[in-house]
Length: 243
Image (cartoon, rainbow, N blue to C red; front, side):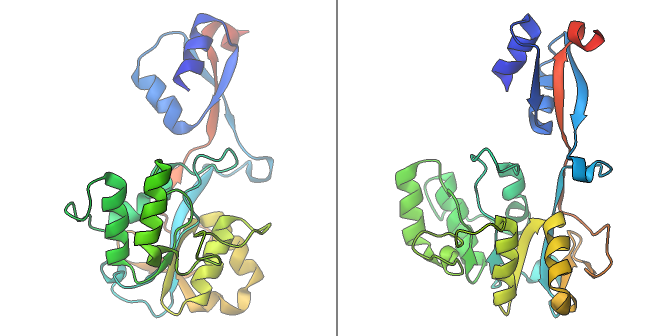
């Protein structure tokens, strides 16, 4: 993204598409001559102010809010932020965990090991697909050592959901539904779609809010969210922006 912005600035590129995080990072560099010329919204969601939002869904009998998550089953859409079709960044994918799971800094020698050990100590079982470490050998070792974080996956050996046309967020919701004590950290839009198709169980679940309150899912068009992602933007230089 930085290289692209440099090329736009010096005139060797006309424009570029940047995530909100990239645009913020470039703005912090205080480079002159760059301008946001358009916000990119999906045609089916043109009136929605955000690209996506994250929510947490728990069973309807859950009590005591955020303080009562230890020992629950954890269903996650997966750490697939390096895939081009996956819009969620690592910051979003790990946001909930970093808010509710205390890190034990003596649990490992690398950030990935500390993070993974802390998750397994906090939750009962989980499906948390994707790369836990950007170092392949460490990723393989972590999955063997902390296999409980793959226990709820369709394929425990590969720590993954079944190959399907459904999104990984939908699969995480299915994972939660199969558990008697599960929670899912997923996209708000996917929750709405999932319960539109499973209206018979909608009252068996509820939203868990960051402030430990709860909200019903049925007919709730503005649920409490954990994080919000603005739409991506098109950036060009001032000369092109004015033409």
